[in-house]
Image (cartoon, rainbow, N blue to C red; front, side, top):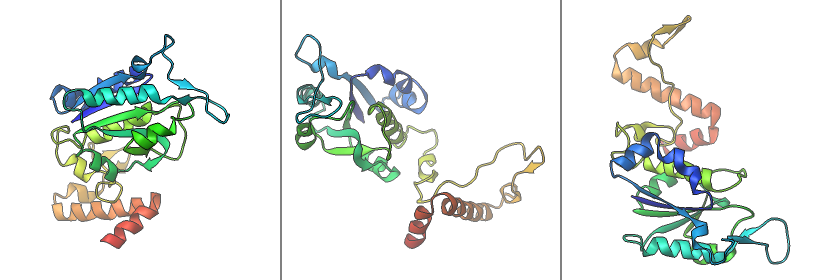
Length: 232
């Protein structure tokens, strides 16, 4: 799977790409991640990527030229013709585990990291396939949302995780939040691990985990628990 990430601050991704699951997936050849500096596609000596909005107002807006040039360059490279263009913006569709699973099946994603007051609408109308938001809050740019998207998709690529079942059994993948986890020692400062987990009875353990997952989801995210109850 290939990612092209278009940003005015590509250096922000250095740590993310060189750690953990993403680093291992890159080393194994499971994913190809390319950082694209938007300023490399400007046409003036100041390498300008933004300008004041028509009609007045505060802030600056990404001009269309560099973004069109950058995306076209990504698509012109080998294997990039059908890249799906995603714009990271607070105004987009809310990112969920279900969406991550959809994206994990896409061979090539081109991520545009927004900045300032947004982008020229012509970019959205004629270049972007989907607008994505990671939540109802404002960040300084789309780089952090792009990192979140990248991490949540890469871990779904077959072979990226050490255990193939891990991604299946995590929170949201089943429709519920994850059940409580315990490890050694069996007792710590007087706090004991639930006896059922030490019983060796896998049927009872599975039943306990489902009950606890539902209880936690109902307590923290009741809308998810109600939806799960309706479907099950």
